[in-house]
Image 1 (tube, rainbow, N blue to C red):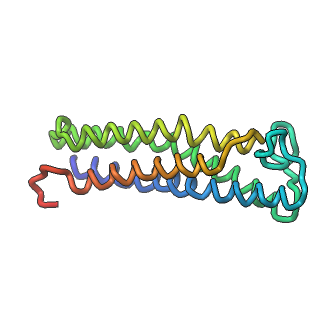
Image 2 (image 1 turned 45 degrees about the vertical axis):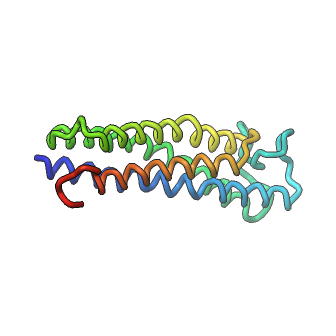
Image 3 (image 1 turned 135 degrees about the horizontal axis):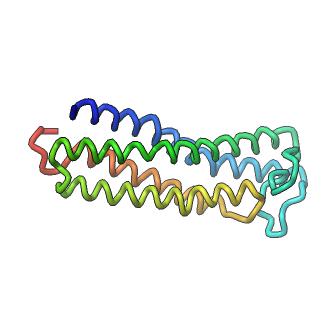
Length: 175
């Protein structure tokens, strides 16, 4: 049973967290390109000057130039991937807890640190990354540099969790 739970946990992590990490990382540069297209075409931007043309609430997704509809469509797709796979990603810790329980390692320090880092990564995604993406899509001012930074933090947290899961300090498996 342990091998089955571990396999589901690892597959879920790859298939759920991987797409969020990639899509979230692709969003800031895509947003910068979309903003540049709008600025180059002299398109109307929100008062603060940081919104995306043609993607505000109630506005048609028409864009400012030939590349703009593709850019805003890409942003919408990347945001949707992040939102949907974030929900799907809940299965990762569920199967992680089940696996840890079967292995009898729930009290291990490396696992407790991994749980804390996972919770922090989820918080960064839900409280910082997704709202900033939504704000940009709704034409509200949101700095893409800050979004890139918090997305990098999100990915760094997952990288640390992955290393802890593989190395497992104090493990007797030799890995």
